[in-house]
Image (cartoon, rainbow, N blue to C red; front, side, top):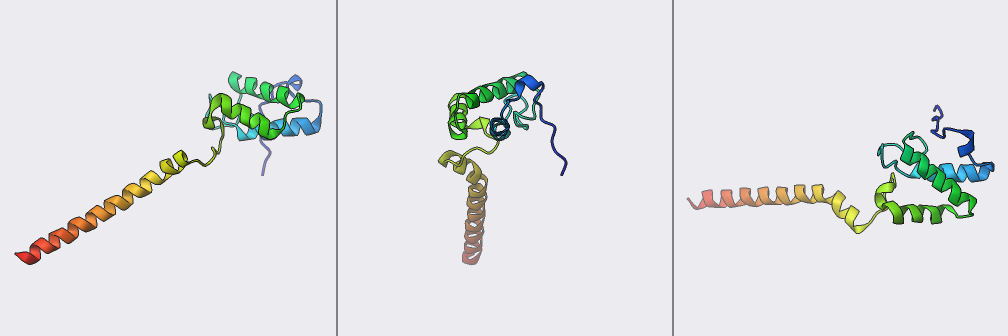
Length: 123
């Protein structure tokens, strides 16, 4: 599998510590670029993605861990910032609505069919 070329534009954007840079990249790969929407911020060349990469690297240098940085991003941008949003009752409702609609529709069709067959039997 070929390696993706990350959008980190300049060596100044990279952190000196390999461990810290790996942490920053791992966090950036989990976050959606608000401009591109289908790319993570590590792959995006959008100015906002560059700003978010800089914010992440600054927080890593301040000693914050992955959880703290992701929570900060979530408070600032909401669940939309995650490429894989967390499961909540609202997302469950959103994902289950099509299945529930089909189930309700099938039940209504069966009831209608049953009522039609009863009305034909009484004639």
